[in-house]
Image (cartoon, rainbow, N blue to C red; front, top):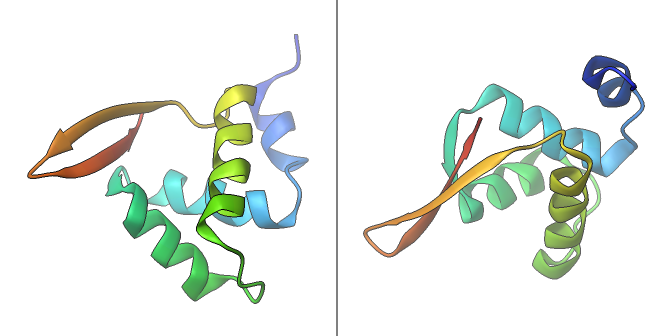
Length: 79
C-alpha cells in the first residue's frame, strides 16, 4: 500500500492546487474552493472541469469530505 504522503507529492499541477486549498482550509463550500482555485491558478478552467479534478482527488482518497447543506450552501470539510 502506497503512503498518502507519497501520493500527495505526485499530484499533478491543477489537482495539487485544489489539494493544497482543501488541506489549508478545513471547512469551505464547494463554491469557495473553486473561487480560491481561480485566484491561485493561472489556468482558468470551467467549474465542470474543476469538479472533474476534485472528484478524482476524492476517488484517490487524498481528499475526504463531509457533505452537508447549511443555509442552502453545500459545505465541504476535510476529514
